[in-house]
Image 1 (cartoon, rainbow, N blue to C red):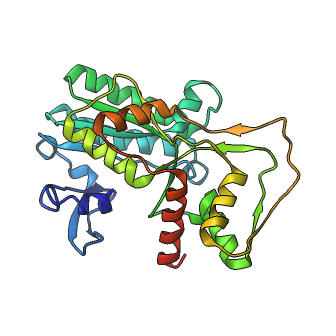
Image 2 (spheres, rainbow, N blue to C red):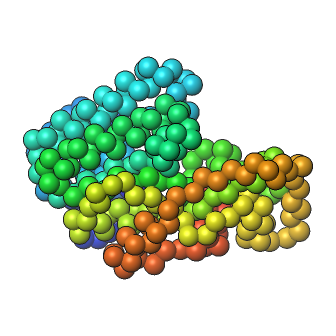
Length: 283
């Protein structure tokens, strides 16, 4: 998001403020250094007239590290700070980064503390938005691709790139069909910021996901094609009776993109940009 904002000459850097877990300098891609403030210093004056993009949250893997109670309490405390500042302000719009995990929790398909916490977060911010009359989008983000991928080996595209570059081959360990769709991270940022600038809100959470449903084997083939050469792809025996599908409703994403006149990157471009960034970062 910061890299995206650094490319927006009409708002960068004078109209961008950062808040995080601690006060520290943050360097953007153009070399500009912004002073991030600690989230607990956030005040209503900071949010008046602002496009608020709320990304702060402990991620899913922290549950095992911290335990469910501390994980839940910490995320509630983060949202408490933001909601307290919002309560005394009049922002232009608010975006809350939810997750596809909230969809799973809502449907009863997965009661993991992360998804339940995200579902609660959506409700709290929607209640505030309705009461205040502020445009809000609670965006359930599914799978992303493109630059700035973190935990490279934890995600299929990153893992496949690493395998191909190290061994010249890709091993798919998924023992059942695994279906995903990807949204380019730059497109996500564009949709968030432009919707905020336009004061667009949604009455219910919406999904941010890709148009093309791909199976793990399709992803491996796309990575191999992008890297070139003779990259072999192998897979362990597959149980075809239990497919795994983590897919959002692309119509949510497409309607917003059409409303904002945003052309979304196809899957092939997403893989290409992910590979280029991983290679450029030396990961």
